[in-house]
Image (tube, rainbow, N blue to C red):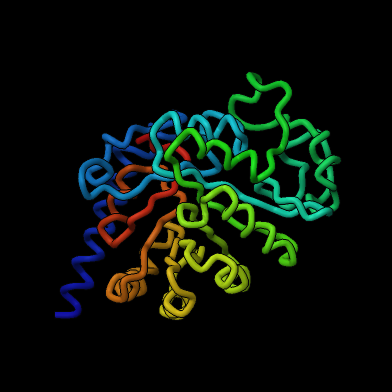
Length: 279
């Protein structure tokens, strides 16, 4: 019986991969976006929530206010952004721990004060030619989009100085987003330290291939889900079953192929983070 089940899962995996490569993968590499209508599960009453990775970064410069505004305009449920701390303890939105890739400056984000980092111009990213004077936003500036939209901020806490966690918690509470935002991180320590500061905030533990140990951490940390790399799904099936059995919310990142999204949903994903799939 067990062998039959394993064979069935293998056949499903193989079929989805072959079908995905044949129907979706090649065209999607040639297109900046893909419609969710090409999926079996991304529409309708039981559809998962779609989050725009680094804002709508396939069309606009990643982790910028225009990318977030357009994610809201296109109708995404949420937008994912990355945050770091500056030398003077300000939270800013940028993916890497250096400014080199995205701006005309060089050096670690943590080596700049807010005033210094605001002098840098963003000179990279999709659609950058339309934004000649774009700057690294503060987290507060990024969250301002939520004032005029119902979109949910999904905030990945990257390399930072944890002494400024109370500042982060205060900001979310001041903006009345502590019960709306989702905090995500690859660092268990960050989630553990933020939990008492943000007792009502949903969190998700970022991993590549989830394990039972990961799921147990989520259960222990309270209101914490698991968000895994969809490319490692084949390694993760038993852990995902364990998560579902124990009521742990499941998310999958970064899914740019609608058929892979269908497969993730089949194994319990309620949140899909994507660069390319439009609602």
